Image (cartoon, rainbow, N blue to C red):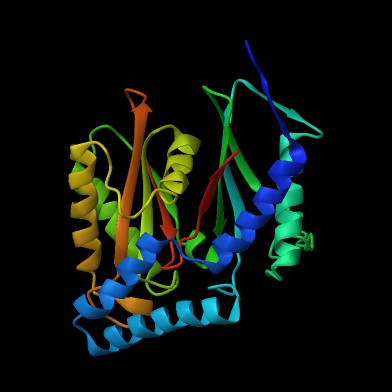
Length: 282
């Protein structure tokens, strides 16, 4: 069996680049939804706000600055091929060094405190939240997803019983959005995890936010549910930035997995209108 070597320094450099790009360039499919909402939004105030959001994205590109002042906690999803051998350092150290360099080079705000209660800033936005999985092949695929906490703080999880209906799940998502109101800078993107256990459904919901908003769930059942939830959330009337209108949510992405016969966990991870992520393969 051939084993491919990948140098830790290559991981570091590409993570650094991804941190900067993710914070300065919105995925094209999400930007497209924001731009099209300028035309479909019926509220005049809402329409004006959507145009302002587009101007903000243009200004960020012109001035080469982040699209949001909260440059987030760096979440990293890594699919590591089982035929890969990382040389020159450990994987986690390489990722965190990449985050450190990226946030320094890009003059990105450093928001991480080293302890949740003593609250001392680490001053380099590390450590990242790293999720790894071992897959077939000899490549490493990494997604870097900076997550701001104006939206993260609005996220929720509920351990339903199997007696819960699809309507109960939709009601939970709508309730979550109503509680959030204007806090997560709507229009939002919703990542929803269904199944697994307590931590797995939360992980699925975060992973769902990294899926293209232009791609529906591959299972037609869940694709239809995504649309039902999107319609229900937009009927809340919260609107752009919470000032009322049709455009409360831009997209709903659901990820599901098997669960216990006695459980039905559901997690809702709220993303703001600049739900950011960049992927690369080594």
